[in-house]
Image 1 (cartoon, rainbow, N blue to C red):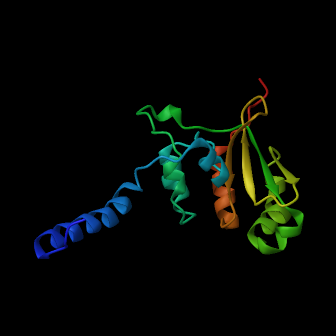
Image 2 (cartoon, one colour):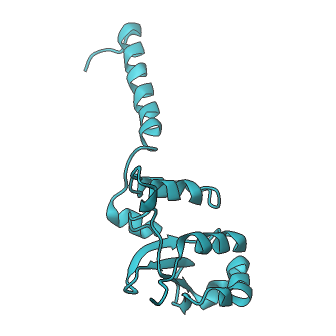
Length: 161
């Protein structure tokens, strides 16, 4: 190892500064693994424009690391046929907005079922026409009006033809 003098010490300091600064610049564009996205409550089926809408309600920007780029076709907006609101009954006391939705608003959405699962964080499991889960969205910090708006925009039950 050589002696650190003023000329190579400055270069060494610059390398450290670059290493410290670069990660913060690249994290906004990095994609998370499928497993990491699922742990956060995303299946990777979310459109990035939906993540931008979600950002109006939730401060967390992890959705952008798990989303799929939108196509230019406006008809490609993903909608679902139903949803399961999954929550732990014991933890409901910590989520008054979700309790308010379940007690006062849920009946307006017959295509939304409530499922009580031990130790489950509050989340919406979005369902396709066959009733299969297609996406999971955590709603820990959502207000009642955000749940209402999201369900009105994203859940379009299939009509009997």
